[in-house]
Length: 259
Length: 330
Image (cartoon, rainbow over all chains, first blue to last red; front, side):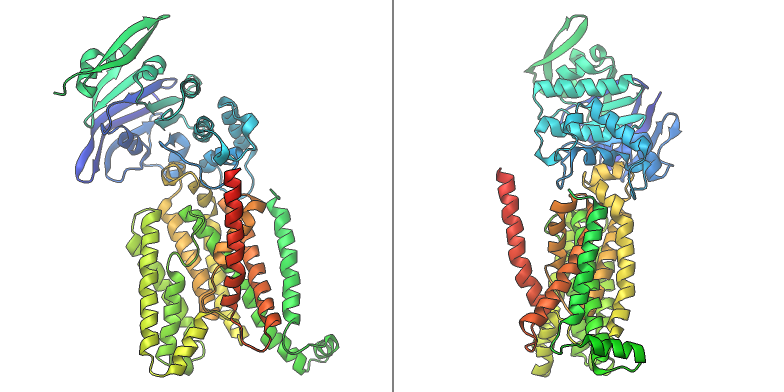
């Protein structure tokens, strides 16, 4: 198992935003972390990267503890794409993606051949090769999202954490982003992403982890994790469900009274 | 975009030309023959003395200070991810000016010739410690707020010193000094400022790769292995050393630190690391050229360098702002 976390607890402004969460994402698996606003999903993701100061617990990537390692070593093993990423200054697409090689490179002098290959691979996986020379700030929302994803892919870390990669994208771009992320998992990565869209989560996740009030409420295949009682507890909603071409789907349909 | 290497060569060449022109320009015309004769015989003639003891320190200081301000401006804009950041934003220039004013006010500067620049550098170092304490672990915003607070406090204390000054002559001297000038500076000033600037530049160079990663925002940069706290300390200390040393020997010279990175971005691209050396060169060229202009426009009336940089800088900045607006619209 490629990414494992045990007993992650995070205190934010005096209250426990994440309480004793255990997680494991296997190599080759695309896992989705889902839950209502304020459930602690993003905080958990940040804690896994070591970005939350008041966090306790342990994280292992490829069975080696993450937090003992120095910052660059950590960054080489766990890549993170925060939500609402923006590209400051007028960097080109290739320059932005190259920043993903920061943990592998001193930052002085040109990139090594291996780094350039990794950047090219990331650009290819995200279908951005033709835009590589363009200014990243002049791209559309969907293209910008892919540039930022390519930056995270270029790290070539065994584990990848992605926070809301498809927010504010059109359906075509959403499917494209999800396909890229799943493809990265199939290449042997452990991918954990935060999503809000139940339909996309059911369609693309190998595993779904549902968070509610800082705890993990359900963890399993999409059908197990997004069962009617779980949706009722977590979101106070009912969802339509069915099977299409052998794949399950979920569609949020109506609100139920909150308990 | 021009490759950085080529631009640095071109900038270096312009800098050399400005260096020579700056040595040649002044109220007293220098004769090349006299200079060669002095160099040969080893006897310092009047021309030789003017060249080595008046024009050379002045020129070296213009280049050094311009480079330091350009570098500090580029690094701060990178750290704060804000194109409006300049060395004034973190309050260090006001603080080191306050140090100098205190040296004037107490009469220390009249007793010990180098008391004024020393006090200015000392105060800029105090500024670094205060900023670190005030901004703590917060992000760019808390740093800017701390800088504004320090800057206002230093400005208020400077005004207080001006109003309480026992004799009007001292007040006038303080005001003139604060406008920024390179008149009557000696090699002692160069020797005093240079080590601080070199240390500052080295610290800023160390921060360059992290500044690149910071273009993605603080969270993404941290996830790439950037130590945010170390980066901020490097940039604040480096910029403060550069700015403090320059204020110490020349007074407050505005606009160079703000303008130099903006001039270079269209040429070398927006990557903060590549911008550092380019911006340093641009700053050196800008200040050397301004100091030449000061002497050409009004050789006898002591026109202040800080006034000229602002007079050139403000319209140039306006032009860049208008161009950015039309680019954004198209």
